[in-house]
Length: 351
Ligand code: FAD
Image 1 (cartoon, rainbow, N blue to C red):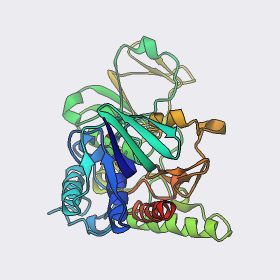
Image 2: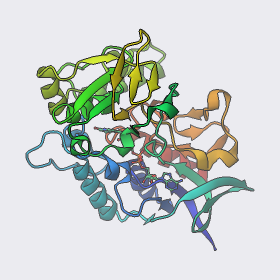
Image 3: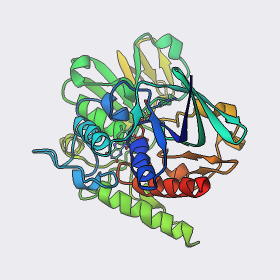
Image 4: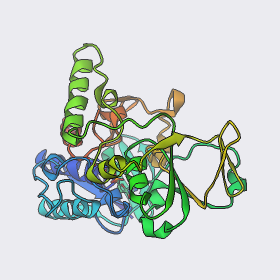
């Protein structure tokens, strides 16, 4: 069966909901297709102790402040899920679940969206599928030889799963630091990072990061010198559990090993460490396989965008994937502005 809508939004996480809010304000007829069975996007799958790096009031989508979480300055992932459930309901956003989009195709003046439960035709498509679904693991020699557990951030839940074990955490970003801090008490944890960890000053959190990203965007828009944005400040927000583990001297990092060996890892100088598990906190890539039929990837596999609009397919917008599709757009507070711009542009296109 073929359904129609003026706009199909692919993904019902925070980015899909934020753009839904603005499409509704523009009076556009739209549907949001989400592969999950329940609301909350990637936040439903986060590890138990994950904390936002901004207070609730600074983690809000357009139109509705995130309420504070009782007893916590930095809310946990469950609090974000509850906020997104409420947001979706409050604005009566038309989300269809579970619907997985398999491919987007050009179909004359329309775009055709093939899903695992039917086909949609639309004048425009907004892809808001996030990155959680495409974990990135670097190629390291000896993977087949290791014999222990190899996990990515997306599979980590709680330290009790590794109690007493030798665990290596790879990665010097926020995920690596938070998971290393989580494991520091109950396991024999080794933290390895490509360069010495760069903790942000204790009084810097997501609010400051958002301001830095905004200042950078303005500078670039106005042709001024690149301010360096967030990266110039450091990599790791010292949320309370990270701060505490660091202050206790439990977050000392070694350089990354060069290969895996049976039952452990080996550094370039031949030093070895034994491990039963290695957790790769090595980032993500945008989940875009459904856009492959449009053949938009240019050099280096990137889809060229102007703001959120695909340069070679103006009926397609990409929202929430990070700096590539507008600085800070992969954050709760940062996705509102590009969502508004995308909805406006699309309303203009439809008119
Ligand atoms: P997602 O939440 O991943 O939602 C995308 C939705 O699209 C999902 O429901 C998915 O199932 C669906 N989908 C995917 N493919 C398809 C398909 N083919 N068909 C249909 N549906 C599909 N941001 C902050 O603001 N503050 C923080 O403190 C913070 N901490 C973070 C910590 C970690 C560890 C990570 C990874 C990210 C963090 N972020 C934070 C960044 C960001 O806010 C989250 O990554 C957020 O989940 C991104 O939202 P999204 O809507 O873009 O993607």
